[in-house]
Structures are given as C-alpha cells and as structure tokens.
Length: 280
Image 1 (cartoon, rainbow, N blue to C red):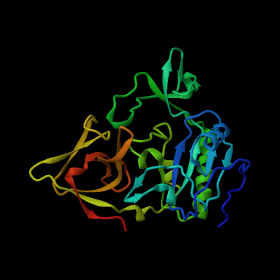
Image 2: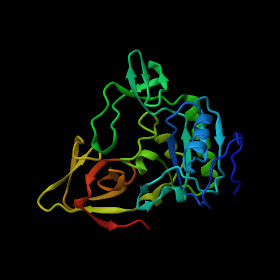
Image 3: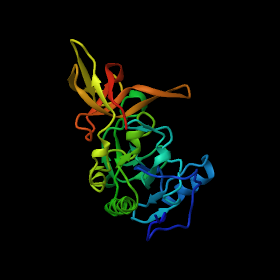
Image 4: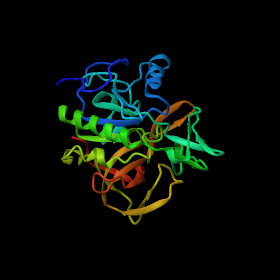
C-alpha cells in the first residue's frame, strides 16, 4: 500500500507514533485560521499531536504523515467498543473555526478568528457536560471546494485501506470535543464506504422492568426528551460519553445509541443497559 496520496502538499510533517493499520477515518476541524498555521501550532505548542491530512478552505490538501503511521489526532476516544482511535484510524482535518459567537456585526471565535454573516450557519453551540447553549452562536461553513476535496481524500484512502466507516471526532470523544460540528454533513462521507454491515456490533438490551428508558438529544439529564424505549428493547451503543471534573476524565453515564445500528438516535443512561452482544 502506497502510504502517500497523489496531488497533495508534503512540505510539512507532524510527529508519528508507531505503525498503523487503519480501520476508520476520523474527521476533525482545526479550530483555527490557515491550515499551515495549524500545522505549525501542532509542531510548536503541542506534545506530538497531529493529523494525517489537512484540507484548506480553498480545497488545498496537505498530507503531514503517511497512512501507515499513527498520529495523535483523536485523544481519549471510543467507538463501538473500540478504545483509543489513534491506534486504528486516519485523522483528516478541515481548516475551520468550528463554533463561533456573534460579536456585533460579525462572528468571532474564542481565538479571535472573525467570520462574516454569510460564512456562518446559525445554531446553538452546546458546550461540555450539559452546559447551556451559547447565545447568538453559529458554526463556520465548510466551502464547497473544501468539502469536495475532503470527499476525494476519503475516497482515495478507502481505495487503499480496509476502512469500515467514516466518523466525526465529536462522535468518538463526546463531552470532550465538538468537531466537526453540524455544519458538515457526514452522509456523503459514509456513502463512500459502501457495505457497513461489519459495524452492526456492540448490541445492548434495555433493562427497565415496569418502566421505560428516556432517549435525550444531549449527553446529560438536561437534554430534551426525544423518545422512550421499552424494557427489553435492543439498541446498538455507538459511543460512551466522557465526563471531566478538576482535570480528571472518566467514562460518563450517557451513551450514544442507534436503533438501526447506523443512524445516531440519541443518548440514554447506561445504568439501564446490559450487554447483549459485544464488539467482535
């Protein structure tokens, strides 16, 4: 397998951390301005973190690590019973500020990045551990050229590697991260994979005798009620949320589930689930 894609800029690199046999692609955003500036920041200010590929807003693609070497892009993470996504995934990041707040006539993110009205999709930004949404907030749009380049990159990776699925950082690090956010549709990326039946794993059963289990739209009791599940219902657990306090992080009680194994249905409290079929 050729570990470098065609028609990419290889002028910059990030630190790698051992051999990699990838099963997933994890999508990120940089939370910053230019992609090259983000790469420099990763190299100068962080402890060996980095992505395999970064995509600028104009569609320019930078590959900073070979596809057969692990990078630290996902951090503490889990998906369908797997832990530590760094060990078996490719990190692809889009140059994008992510969540952004209105400041007078423009939008601005916490690092000073400024956006015009037409560059932002309005919508709530819910922070960690169930905190209330920001007021007058939104998300930076992903330009068409950038999305098309991202799809091309993922298609090239899937052609080279046995990729099971394409997922977002905010799916595998719930409560810790919120990239890529709602401004990027995941559907065109998952459609590149084709047969995803191997992902129908990590099945749990609802245990609520004489009661029902509430499904919420957020990983806390503050989330809005979406629906309820009867005792004995079976669900697929996609990801377990994280809870951080005083610098310590634990697996949380609110888990992201799917009724059909693919669509993200919502969050339920894990005290009322029992394992029916683990990851295999």
